[in-house]
Length: 322
Image (cartoon, rainbow, N blue to C red; front, side, top):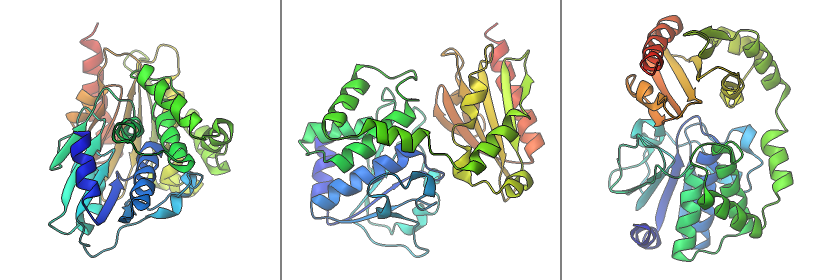
């Protein structure tokens, strides 16, 4: 399959690359790494994300390549979707791709719907960045320092600094090779983990003061209203990682973050600490998805109603294990 993807990309002239809305470092790092390689091949490359390039991730070399999609559709020979499990997660990027492009879908989510004409989905890989590394190695692509830095950031963040389930010898092999290609681990780690803005710290303090426990203290939750987010001046990118503090509590099997959105929707992020508890299954009941131990959904309804309904399904799933 890697050979078919390489042939399609190398045979194209105009290529668009994009990842999911509300991007993380895996989504953006993979997008930039792919765009940098394709540009080195002489391709006319466009890199998009519905949210543009969040300031939080500006440390990624080549971050200026990513922009928000235009309102009118553009024509491409190939569209490469990275780290996207379902088409709707591309957001407004969907409307910016004119009919006629060949869709290639590379992802690692078990809930991927194989929406591309060429699909490479490896649910055993802990990050899309790892799949791209293996793709580059397979087809003999030289990995520059900038490409390596983006791929390392993608892998490091999506594995929880090489801690999460699914991290194996393939992952460490990729990390070692990327360091050999020039990644400055200390500087990159400082940018990724030790450079948070003050407003994010205030959000964390707010969250920890409002944690709620459910299902005999086996579920920890935090809710954020639009009003509270506006009052603190936090950005959507500031929410990333808050949920991990809840999951770290001894005795908690699952942590859930409920975020009120505009247009009457609630963003649900769920994490599991027990491999026997599949939060992807729970999120799929709400038309979401992801990984067995890290999933999410966007649900129409009020924050309180969505919270009540989601916790009922999650609690039932936990009690079935008893």
